[in-house]
Image (cartoon, rainbow, N blue to C red; front, side, top):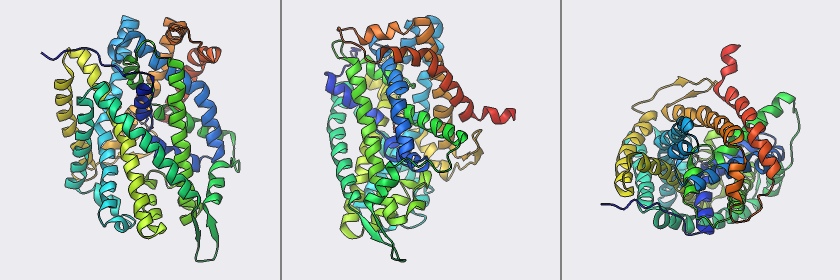
Length: 468
Ligand code: PFF
């Protein structure tokens, strides 16, 4: 029989890299830059940093400490904190269960673009319709989703230390080097338009970093604040049980406060540098208008920019970008599957290998269905927040906009008012460390998180629109 010993990271660095692997994902490379471009550049970055140091750190520390103190994944972790709160563990477990249905599909899209840049299709990718014709092709889109799912399953199958930690130790440093190199290159770009105007990468950097306060109203400011908050907890992978599971693999002697801070720095650094790489490049070739193109930025606008760079260099930069994005998506997808696997192992008392195999087969089938959501199973469903979505968007909306804020509200009530913040602080200070910003932590968990998350929940579910 397979032995059911709990896996663990080898130490501080292994944990930080694996957790950073989860945190750094498509959210950093694509979502952060486009939100920054849309929400006043430096203004967005400044608010994001303030929220990170206060609110984000509190959520991260809580999740990791719950994991290490209980040595369990979300379902059993919440049940062991308070049997009455087991339901919160179950809801938390459902978030990665849902995210896993579509994450490999997006990972598959990214992997497709790696192939694109290694075959002679790079200039085709810059053409209109390339992306749409790929995702609406049932065979192509589902094959890449299956491929990505198989890579994820392989890593999780090999366990915490030999799979997840080892993959993160290789991919995360490479990702860091690549992103810094492309950002430096991006800042050296310049381009003269047909009308003779010259735009440089440094002009683009200014657009990105200088706070733009034009037309700022209270309403707009609140909107930016909400964008920052939702980006923050999506980016840090908190409130979805993932950091609880990873925290449960951390050895007792590791300094949790220092680890949490390093994960946050890694995650934010990659997001800010991703903006410094993408925004100047798009600005140089398409001007200010090309930037807030939203979701299509990564798959439609960027290939155009790589093409405009011209010749071999455009292909090399394009290939490097999509390889890096594949690493980012893969380590994040691994953390989602690991969390589902770990909870299932605890619920059903099964071994890792068998659990991973069964889950992988189930998710391969589901990923194919979601991938076919742009062709065979195409639907247009109006969502409460005013957008119209396909199956993938519906899953994303349920997990990120409805469940995650809801979980944050309940878990901050459980920690702040029932277990009390000291329960977390004790774990953070277990080896005689001093938890930094302790007062801020208490205020965040007891008051700020429940209030801010309730506002976010009301806003993102469009609940107020129903009342109006
Ligand atoms: N934190 C990842 C990012 O910023 O892209 C996204 C993510 C990973 C979300 C894992 C959800 C998840 F379960």
